[in-house]
Image 1 (cartoon, rainbow, N blue to C red):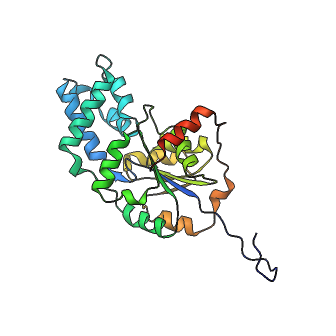
Image 2: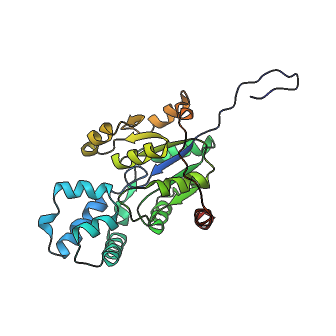
Image 3: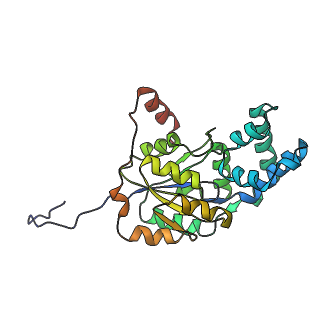
Length: 251
């Protein structure tokens, strides 16, 4: 609560939440490139019959590392990930475009002084390359990538929140698994139903807000500050975590 020079109470200034967006399917429309890359690798390794609709949907939520570990147990997982990244980079980078509405949303967020992060299981170098290609990198204060787990785990999310000294957060993702992660972390979750096949799973995870239009996030942020009722469940931070955060801070 602030007071003016005559000691009159002024309107309370609410601190803006940190905005965290998942990368694939929220910031960039990577789904066609992801499916095409997996289809190429399954064909190359003579496993076409295993690339079912179920596996395709799981591949959109899981990390490349997890998919390779599960689908190609007889191969070196790291080499398979490298093969995936190399083929996608050399053949499909131009296919990956910003999600509809994301640039307008990022411009609005930056204009109104929101801190913005993206967190992904995709390798950080790939995220940076794609953001630069799309001329979006200037909007992001923090970029976290390269996790091996099946989803954007709480470690990556917490790292972004610590780097931005977040007291509150609005976490936006098109993945039901990420919504679960956000709930575990104690943040306000927004389910972005960009894919009709994912919409049901997102709704079932009961995000705090759900939309198929990213610009609805702007209306959400201009409304009642519902995220202030949420307490981020920061784990105890040890010295090793502090060193890692410092090392990963974006210069």
